Length: 121
Image 1 (spheres, rainbow, N blue to C red):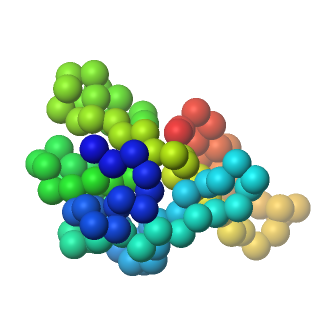
Image 2 (image 1 turned 180 degrees about the horizontal axis):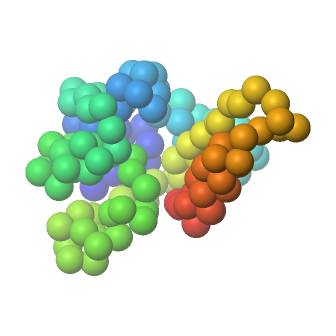
C-alpha cells in the first residue's frame, strides 16, 4: 500500500474526466498550499459513482468521498489508504444571476445542496 502521494505516479489510478479533466491530483499541505501529483491514470471514468465501482472491482486507487465508501470499507470490500497529505477538498460552485430577484425554486435548490454537502468528506 502506498504511504506517500508520490508513490501514486507508478500505481494504477482511477481518474475522472469531469472533476479534474485529466489534471494532476492535488493534495492539501498543512501550510494551505497544494501539492500536485501526476498519477498513473490508466482508467478514466465520468463520475464518482463509476470510480467507486471501478475501485470495488480492483481496477486501481481512487480519491472518493468517505460517505459513499464507508459501507464498503466496513464490509472489507474497500481499503482506506492514508497518505502523508490528505486530498485537496473538492470545490463546488453554483452560479446564478442575481440574489435579489432569485426565484424561490432556485433558493430552495441552493439550500438543499448546501445541506447535503455540509457533512460530506
